[in-house]
Image 1 (cartoon, rainbow, N blue to C red):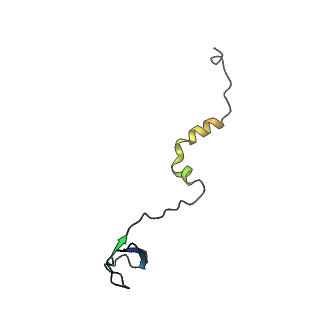
Image 2: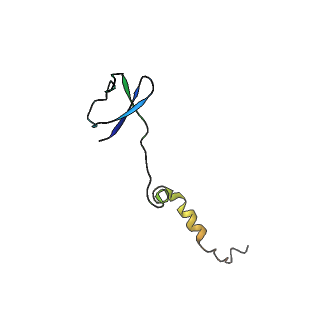
Image 3: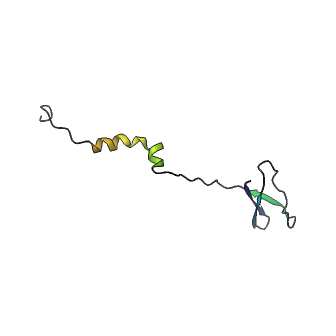
Length: 80
């Protein structure tokens, strides 16, 4: 079950483990003060070696491959 954070009128907060299907709490269970649920951004963890390069960094791959190739020998047109 997820933890939900609630804020009291004085600014202090507390956490409650609730089901996703439960209604948000309206009052503090300890003293009956009105409370509101605090929303915040979820935490995202990118795991794995080269996550960015494997999934999104494909634009730089052709450039890196071109830089790693040996230079071409100059032919008759290259000496003009």
